[in-house]
Image (cartoon, rainbow, N blue to C red):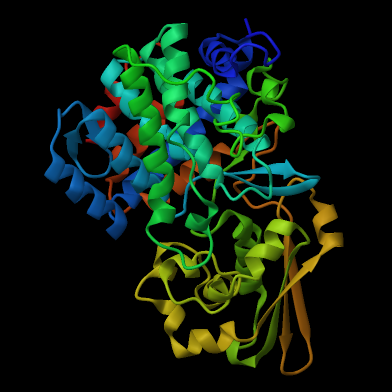
Length: 468
C-alpha cells in the first residue's frame, strides 16, 4: 500500500511510509531484470574504478581509520566498516565516470538527471551488514531509483544545489528498508540524512576537482549514518522538508513534494536508467558512438581533415556544457572525459573509447591538440526532435578536398527503452570488458551468472564471496 497524500502532516513521515511500502510494481520480472543489470554494471564500475588514483587514496584513508571488518571493499580485496565501505566503494564506482546516467524533463527540456547507481554501493554495504537477501537488495534498488528521480523533479533547474544532493535521502531510504526500520525510525533516518545532503553545483562545473568523484559518496554515507543513528533511537527534525528553515531551497515545495510519496507509476523510474557504453560523460555517449562509426568509414588520413563539426541536441544542458572553456581544450583527465572536443578525436584516432584513451595525458599530445583545434561545437533543434528522449549527436568531417562525411547516432548502445529496458548483451559485454584486467574470465562469468540468475531468497554473501 502507498502512503497518503498532502503535506499538512510532516512530509518526511509520508515519505518514510512510502519508502517502506511493498508494491507489485517493484517486483515485475522486467523491472527486477533491469535492477540486476544496473547492479552488475555498478559492480563492474567498482572493480575497475577501485584501481584509479582517487579510489586508492580513499582506500588508504579507510585503512588508516580501521573499523569493524563487516563489509567488503569491492575491487580492493579487504573488509571494513559499513560506513567506510559505503564511502570507498561509492568512490570506486563513480571516479571513472562509467556508471549509469538518467535523463529527466526539466522545464520542458531534457536534462541530465544524475547517476542513481551512486547510491548502490551504500545499499550493498548495508545489505551485507544486515544479512539481506537478493530480493531485499533488488527491491531497495528499485525504490531508490524511483525516489532519486522524484527528488530530482522537485529540484529547480536553476538551483545552485547539485543533483547529487538527493543521494543522502535515497541512501537513507534504501538503508532503512534493508535494515527493516520501523516507520518512526525511518522518518528520523530520512530527516537526519536530509540535514546533511545539500551540495553546491560547483562540484560539477568549472575547474573539476576530486570533489566531483567523491561528492555523491560523501552524501550517501550521510544517508547510511542517518539510518544507523535512527536505528539507535536518535532523532531528526520532522519538519525538515516543510519548515521555512528546512530544505526548501534544495527540494522546492512549490514543485509538489506530494509526488515523492505518490503511488508508483506504470513504468518505474529505474526503466529510464541508461548504461554508459563508453568512458565519458553521459551527454556524449551518442557522440562517441558516431565517432566510432566514422572511424570505420573514413579512408583518408586524419591530417586530411580540415574541420570537425560536432552537432548535438539543442538543449540548455548541452549548451552549458559546450560553453565550458576548460572542456574545449582539456588539461586534466576530468576535463578530457567531459570534452566534446577530445572525445570524438580520441575515437577517430584509436577506433575505441575506453580507459586507454585517457591514459598518459594523451589530450596534451601536439597531434591530438591539432585535431581538437579543428572541432566546432554546434547544436540543432531538428536533431533534438529526432530523439526527444535521448541526447543525439551528429558528426561531420570536412576534408581538405572539399568532401564531407557525416554520421549520426540517436540512441547509444546503453540506452534503456521503457518498454524493454537495457540490452542485456550490451551490459554483460561491458562488464567483461572493463573487468578483463582485474578478474579471470571464469570469475567474471560467475559474477555475471550469479547476478542475473540468483533467486530472491539467495543470501547476498554468495555474491561477495565472488568479489573477494
